[in-house]
Image (cartoon, rainbow, N blue to C red):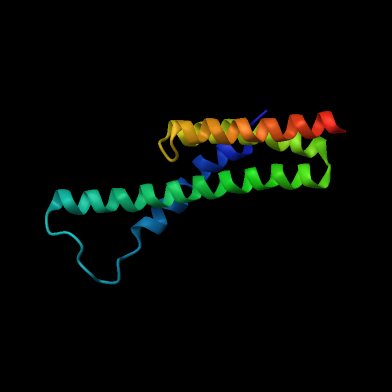
Length: 118
């Protein structure tokens, strides 16, 4: 069984590199070779981090929406995808590890609390 969000990170790497390779409007941002490389790398990292954060937010929103609608099966399945994705975002340094832990804790508490209420 493959995890779609985890594969999503790898599949979009080419797209991220394409976005990062677009010119900066003809404006020279760096004068030294090392500074030019650092700028290229920062654009790639920024695009990757933006994608990971956006996907993470979408997964969290799906869990919250499923719980609000009372659809516990969907909430559990999306939670199973969201937890490793949030952990991976923390491992990659996109979010702080305490932030990841807090998000996971609150989501699990929300799903388990709603499940007990039903």
